Image (cartoon, rainbow, N blue to C red; front, side):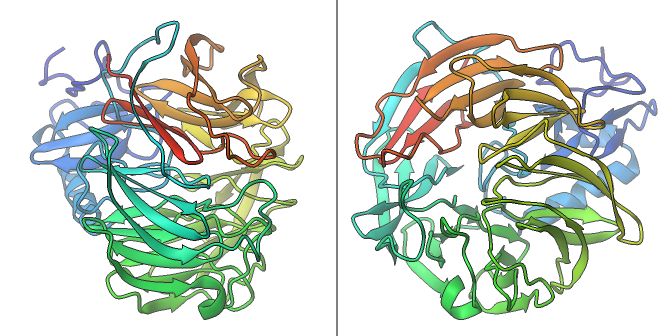
Amino acid sequence: MNSRSHFLLRSLPAVALVASLTGLAEARTWTQSSTGKKIEADFVALEGETVILNVGGRKAQVPLAALSAEDQAYAKQEATKGAGSATGGAAAGDWPQWRGPNRDGISTETGLMKEWPADGPKQAWVYKDAGMGYASFVVVGGKLFTIGTRGSDVYAICVDTATGKEVWSTKFGSDDQQGYAAGWGHGPRSTPTYSEGMLYVLDAKGNFACLDAAQGEVKWSKSLATDFGGQAGGWGFAESPLVDGDKVVVSPGGQKAGIVAFDKKTGSTVWEATDVKPGKAEYATLVPVEMNGKRQYVRLFESQVVSVDAETGKQLWKSDWPGKTAVIPTPIVDGNEVYVTSGYGVGSKLFKVGADNSTSDVWMNTVMKNHHGGVVKVGDHVYGFSDGGGLICQDWKTGEMVWNEKGRFTTKGAVHIADGKLIALNEDDGTVTLAEVSPEGFKQLGQFTLDPQSPNRNPKGKVWTHPLVVGGKLYLRDQEFIVCYDVKG
């Protein structure tokens, strides 16, 4: 291959570009200017004169000049947006928000171990004071950020990724374990968001704050319950804040305004989505999308999936959802198609949004009943744990099961993709499995068990913090313990 006849996919050896590629994301078609050849990929970042694309879960580098004039303009426009978005101030390869730069659960890491040793990858360090709770991590500029409850106080915490040493910790809320059900364990359920030197955090009781990420100083704070009449789900507020441009957006729920946007620098209210009145906020997280020529935010509540205009908060469309007990997973949006799933026997569905903002179901079934471990889409397939079904590969277009793996250590938990491999965390015992990402079947490439695990975890609680790979390191957490493993190839 050469750059005159093919896209230069530097991190994807043996990938040849043809007029139509299968098994890749369908977010956008990119065209090579000299040949007219095309590739399906998600935009990640523009670094100088190089466009970073997400191709089927792998990071690819393409010279800007090799793309069509339309694609070049699009990449520059998206890069400009990114300067003020959740990735603002974060370099390519950082993880500035829940489920990553694209909120899809897919790391752009490459050059990782293709298989793990029999005893697992080498442990780099253990941090022992993260507090109680289930928050995951953001990693930016060599710093890891998370939140946790120490005693009756909720802290935002910054840890150096090279050493595992604490850089700072700041109290931003109180947790008396009242007002939400702590019977499965107390503490935060939300993951922080980083943008332009600021950290946005939300605890289980609705304390919402902006902190300086360098020093940990609280800049402003709100109460979703008191200030906006918010109504948490039974297990507390669990959404991870969305930063988009100059706004930070969260979902108080309730009957006043189900979604609220703030000025991310001052905390002043930009708009309130007063026509969204879902009752319980539930536990899913907002997804920003471009659809029908308009920037919008998609949110899954207990009985509906809604979208609001990013500029005004006005509801654009909604689709019914028969949620039960707890509705948690983040929706997946691909073009005008939206995929949602939840547990307690409900299942999953795919629906389309028409040009007139009407919605129509494509399919709905109980193949994927994802409780809270999340699902990821690679190509035309979705991967995740289904209640009672173990690890599942599901066809995006039809909803049919492609395969499932129901082994002892793949019964239920969270999933993550890095360097084209699936990382599955078993919630019961903290076993972590590395496997191929393929519709051809389950192929295990390594397995080990998280150690240490917390002796203080509620007896009903499990290892629920989602895993993360960034900077060649795998981060896992069980309550107060954050454990870092070296997974570089």
